[in-house]
Image 1 (spheres, rainbow, N blue to C red):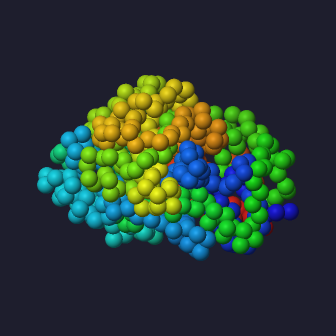
Image 2: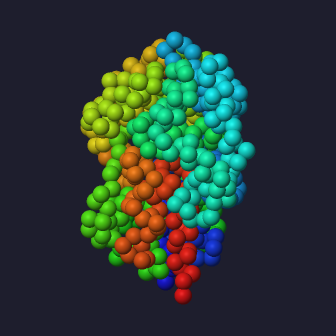
Length: 469
């Protein structure tokens, strides 16, 4: 009998399997698709030689992840690549605010009235960042806080809505960039703890940047799988699990799946019926005949570019997708241009480009033209560079990854109490109705992102259970 079986080879499932194998437990991992990866994959979606990331592309939480940093993933081929700027937020007038590695450079891009406010916001946390990110991403407490004072101070700053935190700023440049940071998790700007979400993304950039993985996000998953194999773990692909009886006998079963799928497989009935899924995304991967012709020079040097003319425009787009059930007329967009730092992603002189906007969960329309009109506001002539497109709306995204119910790449709405308490109100969110069944997906704390910490935290719950007499 195995000690643990893990279902789902996304970053969290892989991390949970690694953490258990590192502690001497026998582990087997089962994945329905032909390759490991989940939300961290790389494929030729458009033309030969153009390597795209179907889901995640830039990894501020990955490079800062306490779980990943404790593993020798560089031995298994993972290499982080950094653009000159982690992120830029251009405006229609051809200028841009930036999120740079330097706090001073970032603050200067906001203008004199907000430079000091931004420094006072982030500088107290940076010297204690490693302890803070470990404590923040281990909530609810799977370990005693290393720095409870800094964590409490961060909570006081970040638990209120981001709209409260933005009152520190006078001008729209800083407010708009910060609103864009919050929108990465498709959260309404006035929601609980949205200030913390924006602040974590900003601090992550100053601490270690917003890199891409050389060769694509698949490199992260392949490194985790390689490490797991060397630890003695077994990886089985092309193996769809429809019920617990499909799996070999084990002392524990750990699911990197949506709560909906877990309830179906484990026979939990309506146990997770109260769990809410958030807006979907409409994503376009581009093969380009050269770089994006951004008007703002800062955007040409950035790995990630946020698209939203103002805080009000971003808020309107989020409300349309999350509350009004319609696609926005001017979507907030997150774009990534890996070819700025990674020439392996496209043929010589060409580039890959990654972009998505928010739409209602399960939306079946086509947002391509709306997205490209929005891009043309900040990069006139963009359409002239397009060689090919790979388009994926919520149905296609959900078909590609079953965890993304209705196209929700966060595997659950980041709003209300579910921002902090997911997938259920529980002191042990990784446990389930069955004492031998656990959940480790992004539906559990700390939530969305390629960081493996949901898997890391769940593995702690599992090995404590396995060590009981």
